[in-house]
Amino acid sequence: MGLMGAAPTVDWDKMLGYKAETVGGNTKGIEFLFKKNKIDWLKGWAVIEAAGKVRVGDTVHDTKNIVIASGSVPASLPGVTVDNDQGVVVDSTGALALKKIPGSMVVIGAGVIGLELGSVYARLGAKVTVVEYLDVVAPGMDGEVQKQFQKVLAKQGLEFILGAAVSEVEVENGRAEVEYKLRKDDSEHEIKADVVLVATGRRPYVDELGLDGLGVTLTDRGFVQIDQHWQTSVPGIYAIGDAVPGPMLAHKAEDEGMAVAEVIAGKHGHVDYDVIPGVIYTTPEVASVGLTEDAAKATGRKVKVGKFPFMGNARAKAMFQGEGFVKMVVDADTDRILGCHIIGPNAGEMIHEICIAMEFGASAQDVALTCHAHPTCSEAVREAALACGDGAIHA
Image 1: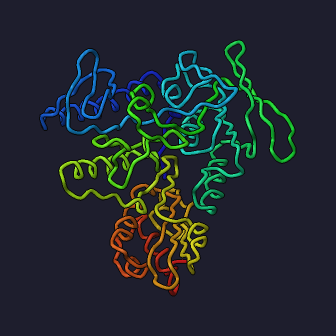
Image 2 (image 1 turned 60 degrees about the vertical axis):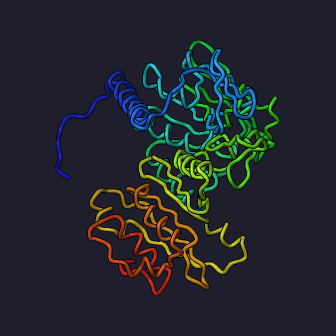
Image 3 (image 1 turned 45 degrees about the horizontal axis):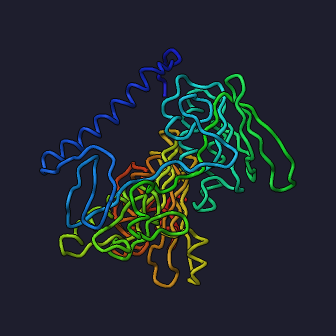
């Protein structure tokens, strides 16, 4: 682009301060909304003693309804002890507060959290190796996206060891050694690093809330079991967010929070679980909504796919971000959009066009016939929709 200057340097303490300031500002914003809407904030550990009774500290509060929204915590891995204070074997919480940028890092798990944080530290200069039990990165995503995503991250310096089961992590002299076995041949290997990030998912956080004594039913995976109105097995006690089954996403929890408030108010609460977008905040971003191509075919439908590369998009190429693509999955008989998968610039913003389209039952042709501003990355979404019909214009 012709922008010249000295190589940038990283002030790690200042970066951590910026992170803390940003999080703190958002948290204070919620506190302001509490005050504005006359919501009492009781600070302390809550235990549900009975339906309609919540004890915080030494005080029992009477209420008509209780909503469990206790979130989730990082899942553990057998043979691996996480100690965030020590800063060698950490989970996602510890990875956000390392005392310095490590020279090398092993990430256990190629899911959303592992890839996001791993890519951050790779860009900051760490040598990052990702060890994943499955044979793909970003499990659950569209297959073509998974392959392209791995290629892009590999270009950025991340190394991948797939199909590997981690058996143990040992810490000695301030460094860690990860022992793993390749599933294809049972061969045993080891790799050393300054920091190991355990990113093997999250689990619902419902411990010590008193649920056992109340008879609140949990699923086999430890989630709070709810009915279609988000009510637990105990009348008057509801649950939402990461504490209940479904994708562990903040916006899913927010939708459930609004819906359960409507239910408690005697109205009709609704969440369309088929139209909840997911975003991986790497560079490039990865975003998806609805069914993947394989999932759509598994339903027995006739499926057609429209795909458009960002290399054919003027805005993306101008930003040197033309490696990805937009992929639209459509019912071949009705032309109704079943899902969309994007890897590329601003994917997390562009996916909402398709969310709205799906919410209104739109067809690919509806998107294809809608004028999109030029030059924008969103034109690639329209081109993918056109590809579901007679073909994209700029392919």
